Length: 325
Image 1 (cartoon, rainbow, N blue to C red):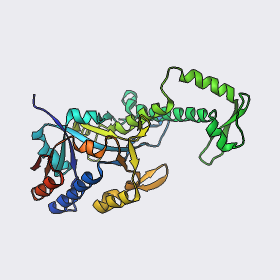
Image 2 (image 1 turned 90 degrees about the vertical axis):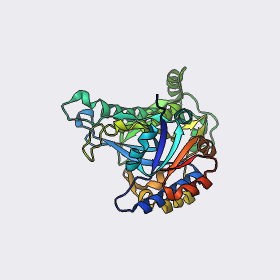
Image 3 (image 1 turned 90 degrees about the horizontal axis):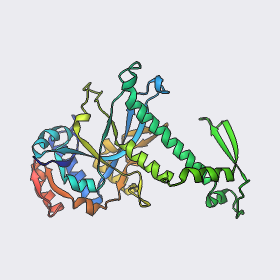
Image 4 (image 1 turned 30 degrees about the horizontal axis):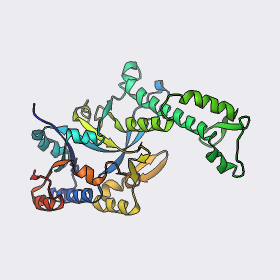
């Protein structure tokens, strides 16, 4: 059986640039990877949300990830035509050990009347509701946590079970819709019941965040090509969760953001609208902390680059096989 590898190809060609400009942009990216490691780029992914699943607005997920494609070596040239002339090759097993997971392709709705074809958007939507429920449970836990309560009542050293917590459900204008007054003892008993032999709520949210970063539509609706994304055999490394208490990804420093803007201002300056606020793409990027940069770079089996950058790449990535595309 012909072996396959994982490839991270870049940069995606633009109609506005020459082949030389494309190669130079890729070289800037390759140098940055050697210097600071992989950056997880943010993207907003949308699913149509029919009224029948409870919302007429799109389901929008912020995903922060780096993408790889499973290919045989002879498939790389055709792949590079679409995704860029540079390719970093990894052994499949090595990248799986680094936490790479396959994309979960979820189909968009076909119509309001095709109820079973709504399973994709329903799944994406309800996982968001599950996350909201878990965050509400964490909020309940904070009402029983002495350190959290002492921020509100710094002189208190003990909170009796008959102390009352006020829980509020509000609207977007911060108005109160529902209000509940519950003794702390009742909250403690309920949480003890829910957490018995169970994973911590925060760990569950981390798993949900991994899933939500893996979802992607099956169809490329921009060019009306059904199942196009599904056929790409994409895997991802995500980082907005913790491993043994250590965050896997880190927000970028201002210096790192400036570096990204210098490398490709068109891409990293692009605006993302998240919860009615706009951010530059660079502001929501993450640097991959685990595995460490040197560990991940040591997993590279080959780098494919344009001819004019072969020698520079060999100098920069000493000991790695570098080939002309």
